[in-house]
Image (cartoon, rainbow, N blue to C red; front, side, top):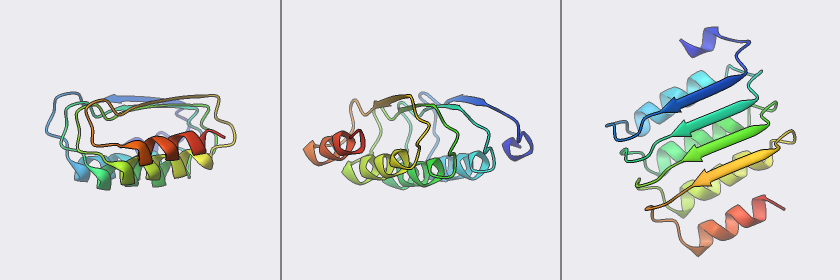
Amino acid sequence: SLQALTQLQEVDLNFTSTSVTDDGAVAICNGLQALTQLQKVRLTFHGTIVTDDGAIAIGNSLQALTQLQEVDLNFTSTSVTDDGAVAICNGLQALTQLQKVRLTFHGTIVTDDGAIAIGNSLQ
């Protein structure tokens, strides 16, 4: 389990074109929260069945990872909406060590409201 790897500094999980759902995203988040030394996280859910519930869980788990310097989250072709984007942004705002962010919402249902939340979180 990821939780046993307490000194891990980088995680790159790619679930492109799989049947991963919100349950899988939540389980991943539960594992990530114990990895307080993480500096880089890349999660790719491109073409999965992840929705706002998964994105909200990810946003919440980010807040516990205060050492993060780089975050790359890809929700291309998922059912994530503005609610998920806002939750991700809320999680990012807690990360004072952050140096690099890449968020991909191509082919989602994110609108101007989500884009505004993203912009506001970068200020």
